Image (cartoon, rainbow, N blue to C red; front, side, top):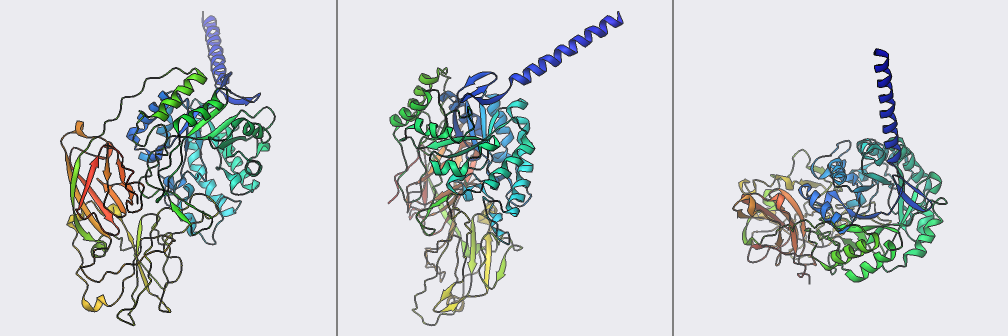
Length: 619
């Protein structure tokens, strides 16, 4: 009897081993015969970019469900290094940065993931996702290159990130089917040793089963510089919706190994980005849907960029340059992108409906039910009052341990003020009572995220000269906007004396582009950076809804709701006039809005909470 039972146990163990091995063998994603395969069957990627860091975590599930109802089976997202390592070896993986929870949520919803781990991401994100502290290293490192110091820091970063996501790879039971290295490198450089190194590091932590991929524009030069098929790295392409996709897919084949070029547009543009001072970028719903149909109905794969754009909360928006470095163009706070799922989650629009119809027609994907609309509220006009000027409160909102004195002005990065504002002060005795001084006020509107000028330091980066005299003995105050929860309790500084008023105080809030001048001489000057505060009441938890704050009539600044930085406003330049306020940052009872206005406020000292975004205030 004992021998028979032992034999039965052995058979059971063999059966379990066989079943496990069979399950593992079937759980596989690869490319063969110019086709993607998943678990032994051909697979068509119908994906969309949805960035976890541009959405409050409470809405991750809602946005993913809306993407699934659109007909998507895959979510693509960047991983911004600067969010996860804001200071050297200080790691963040909670809240907005809890990437593992985001990926697991996609898995729970039966969606696959394409992970874009950088280290450079572009993405209209500050410095292309690089941590600004990289710009403080001496000697200066060369980003996106084989620079040994740079590579060692990438290795350290990936040594933290990649082991966290490795258990979530498809072969390990998770949803990640592909991992992208770098991003559109072919339009930047041709350092193949750099790309080879990234592959080696990725393989070290992720193994050989995962499909690595690159993304480059669908032109010969881009693909020649940015692809590495000899490392068995899949080359995907991106192109605008006006292009004929199939000649580009034919070109794609030349930069993949034979039989390993499944047609994939990894950035199918549903819209476009918008800079301050421009009109809101939009694309036609019908033509966008027709362009997608040309890919999907011939069994090509595509990833919508963006499926849902979200918001550049805080100071994380990126910027571009034009023909030269001085042609600076900062991105607006909204990253709506004219995507089918709007910034605030709306899907009742022509683009969502047209794309959903095409995806269903071409793939036969069942139409999943739409999630219910997220309600929005109009909380009406809110009166605000000026609490204090920046100069009256500077000692209260700057860390005394970080205030620095230097013979010459220092950059924000060297001051350890990676984002936000930095006050520069120096003294100059006027030679003439009515001399005109061309002293600039500087501001950080976001670091360049694309192109040759990406090494973008902020602050005053050169000496400052007045009437032929170079100003020296600078004092610099890092401004902590996180210290504003008890703004009304701060005691302002004493007013300047008449003797002090004859000396010019030069201040700035940090940007390469030097453009403006302000003087703090007496209380009669209203065009000075100041803090304003307003309160509004929400009766109950059920009355807490999404809303927008309209800044019509204001000039330029930053808004903070219940200690959450909802982003920059600049209605004096436009086009964005209202900032999105998601309901999870609100609360029943008293809600506090703090406004840091850099110039002059709305003369009526009001803001308005409205249901719908207002993009009509630009000049």
